[in-house]
Image 1 (cartoon, rainbow, N blue to C red):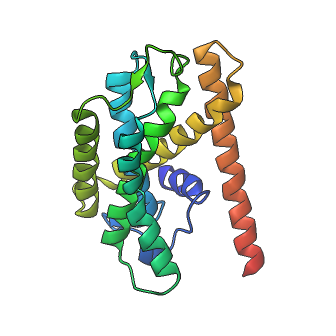
Image 2 (image 1 turned 180 degrees about the vertical axis):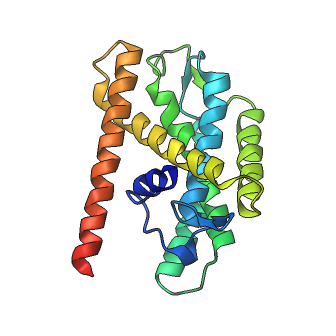
Amino acid sequence: MLHEIFHFFGHAICHQLNDRSLHISGEFLSVCARDTGIYIGIFSTLLYLYLFKQKASITIPSIKVSFLLLLFLVPLLIDGFGSYMHLFESNNARRLVTGISFGYALPYFLYPLLSNKSLEKTSIPVIKHSKDMVIPLLLCSVLGGLVYWGGITYYLVDGMIIFSLIIWFSLLCSFLFTFSRLKHIKGILSISVAITFLSLLSVAHTWIYTFIN
């Protein structure tokens, strides 16, 4: 049952082609290697920011650091565009690595905006010390290696991916409820909308696929 649930939500954002997906213990993950990397990266950075920046008054990275983070997005864009245009052939290892690089950088721009204190004069950039970048990068690198070489059980990996997917979309949906000052109500509404949206998107993708074929 968990397998079906994971793949249902994975189908909302991924083509789920077996030859482009990693498999663990004989089971293909619910999203492709590139999306697996993206959500490993997102999970690692969000976990660090939640544990160490939750109570801090933070804002988005400085201009200099932002340009550095934007460089982490480039490998996926090159790999995705190149393989789509048939300029070269990619592989799952490269898709995983470029996905991790992409996902790792995204939360640094989004997470600070969720704080009501992000625009205060006393707010500090979310990346203040080198450890704010190094620790999440090490974490997602280790997780990526364990996933690629099958060092973590299938259900733990797929559960982490789908959990990260729902949390990421919930964070995006939370901007719809900026009027609410009640943190718990805002969280429940955001998660509910995210799950509903992903469910509808998964059903729509199934209908489209059935119609085309």
